Amino acid sequence: MHRETSSRLSEKRATTAHDPPALLASVRQLMILRTIAVSGQVAAIAVSTALGVALPLRPMIAVIASLAALNVINWFRLKRPVAASHYEIAGYLAFDLAAFTVLLFFSGGAANPFSLLFVLHAVLVALLLPRVPGDAGSEASGGALLARRVGIERTPRL
Image 1 (cartoon, rainbow, N blue to C red):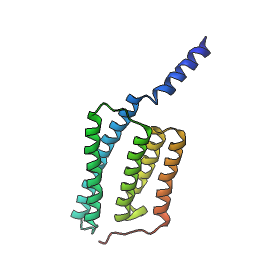
Image 2 (tube, one colour; image 1 turned 180 degrees about the horizontal axis):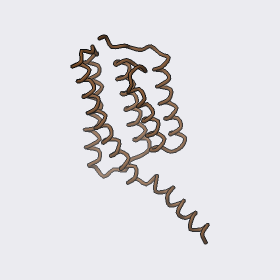
Image 3 (cartoon, helix red, strand yellow; image 1 turned 135 degrees about the horizontal axis):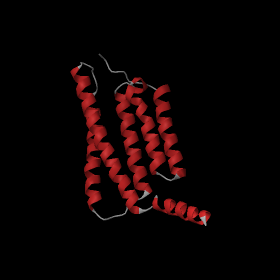
Image 4 (cartoon, one colour; image 1 turned 180 degrees about the vertical axis):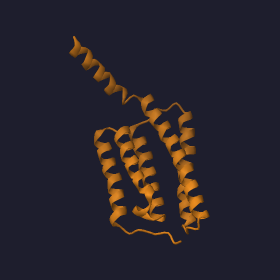
């Protein structure tokens, strides 16, 4: 009896993870996290500029503006009653990872203390995507960090 109940609960948990409302909740959570990230990025750039660190502001502001635009698009998208998919979530995570990588490139690369946030991307990918795409996404996050460590780095001038 216990084994049957346990297997039914496991089965229910497994199907709930792929339920469209759960995927929509993931899209909403990514939008909230992106809003926090954009706010932090703007604050970090403002503080760096106030401290006299020379950063290439135009490309960095363009990247942050693209993240903000994605959030606006996301906001309108969530108002429509359309189911979300893992492909959509993977696209958002890939965009966020690419934007973060570009921002790090322009602000010192792996020497930037924020480069540790690549770990956050790997965790989000592992939590929000099924196993095979999640593994690939986590490896992409790790690969991006590795590329920053061994690749060409742009160091801001003081």
